[in-house]
Structures are given as structure tokens and as C-alpha cells.
Image (cartoon, rainbow, N blue to C red):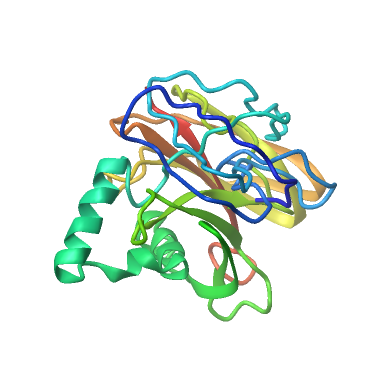
Length: 280
């Protein structure tokens, strides 16, 4: 999502079972454009919806009120507390712990221990961006990871930088996607961790030429998106605002993923950004 200053994260969750513990992390918010909130940061990159690297990040359970310091319309929260949202592949800490037990007993799905493998599985298996299958950057600091991904054949450009955090406190805690770090394409509305209702107003800023934006609302338990914007919203320029309304239905998971993508010049999806919202 973006470069961030170090944060101290206060405990935000009052319900048990969804703590996403982390010892420390490198800077940068997770998809403030739609993923997790970003710390107040330098002018570049622009925050969109991810969360900052901080000690002991926690996942806010669905139904609890977001802590003080929720992000502003720009996606950047003031100094203070913030909670990460579990986007994928696990929706609860109990699920992550169940996988840990299966891994210890039989080596089940070892890719959960690889942040790069988890990031690519997120783009291909969850977002259904099958063309995004190349790693462009990898930065791991403590229990935070930032993984750059891109389409095969694209020249140098990164489609998104995915922010992941170890979900749990054990040595085999799996990696969990919590957002993205945005620069030239951001998703700042709805705010990270906010309560989502249909129709969902989405928006952010984009830099580019002849861009074509599509927005989807997804949840881990469904193969198909819960809602998709009409194709497509034209945009372009230098940090120009964009806005799309997306109706959706069938939400049953506690956390939903809002993903905005643009492409069409070289591949169907050339850049994307995500944020996490609560369904109830």
C-alpha cells in the first residue's frame, strides 16, 4: 500500500479468537486503498487501505466497533491504534490454528508458510486474476511481508504490493493477506475495516492513461464475486479521483474484500488494489 512511519498498535478486539499477532514489521500500510490502514506517511506512495507495520497487530472481529484512529477519507489514520482485517486465506484465528495442527501432523499445505506463495495464491485462486503469476519484489521484516506481484510478460511493472502478516503467535503461524500498499492506484473508499452495505460506494485515485476500472466485492467462502461493477469506468490523468458504485448480495463471511483493477493495454489486469470491510 504505502510507505509508513512506525506505529504502536493498541489492542482493539474485544472478542476472542481473531488475534493476528506480530512481533514487528517493516513500514508501509497494507492496502490502504482497500486493504489495511496506512500510517501517516511521506507524499509517496499514496495510502489506500492497508495497515502499517506495527507490533502485535490484531484482527478486529466482525461486529465490534473499529478502534479510535480509523482512517480518514484518504485512508490514512492518525497516530494511534488500528486493527488489521483477516482477508485471506483464513477468516478466523481458529481456522489458522486448525491448519497449524494439520501441518504439524502431516505437512498439510506447506505454502501457507511462504508469503510469496500465499500472495500468488491470493491473486489467482481468490481474486481470480489468473494472469498475475510473477513475483516482482519480496520484503519480509519480522512477522510482516510485502510481496510485489505482476502479470507474466509485463515489463518491469508491479500490479500490486500485497501486505501479509503471520496469523497467530507460533513458529508455524501461517501468512494472512491483510491489504495492499498502493502508489499510482488507490482504493480509499470505503474505509478499511468499515461496515459495508449494498450498494457500496467505492473510489480512490489513479495515475495513468486510458484506464478502465472494474470493482468487485468478494468473500473467501464464495467462488463467484458477490457483486461486480458494470464494465468499465474510464479514468486517467495524474492522481485523478475515480468513483464506482457496486451493488452486492450474499455476504456471510465476517470480512469482505473490495478489489479494484485496471488493465487492457497489455493484459486484462495490470494493476489492482484492495481493501477489507466488515459485512456485519
